[in-house]
Length: 102
Image (cartoon, rainbow, N blue to C red; front, side):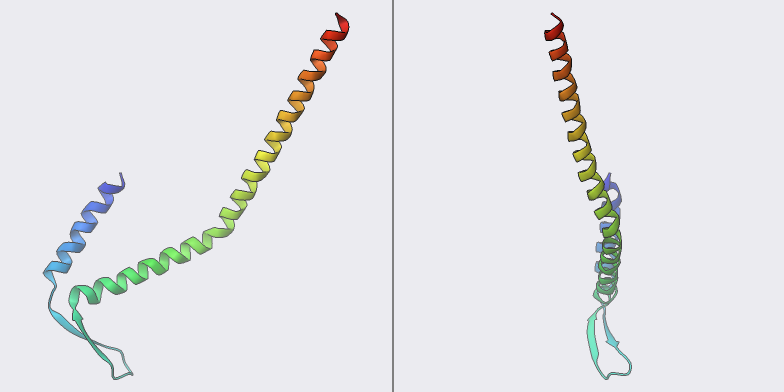
């Protein structure tokens, strides 16, 4: 399923890069710095950096929920062990009652 989404996007990015190889000059006002780069690189590099920055923001904002989930899983496992222990005690008590009545 992921390939159905990724493959067309990857093809479009490659076609964009191959179609836009002209060199452009990038400047940052108020600095007198110029950078000459292919147009595809000038567009795709900032887009990639923005994507990674957005992914990092989402990942960090999701950390508290993940911690709560991990804590809930640990608590559920502890409660399940407690239930298993109680069931084992009940079975042992029932076996003792049957052995004592016979």
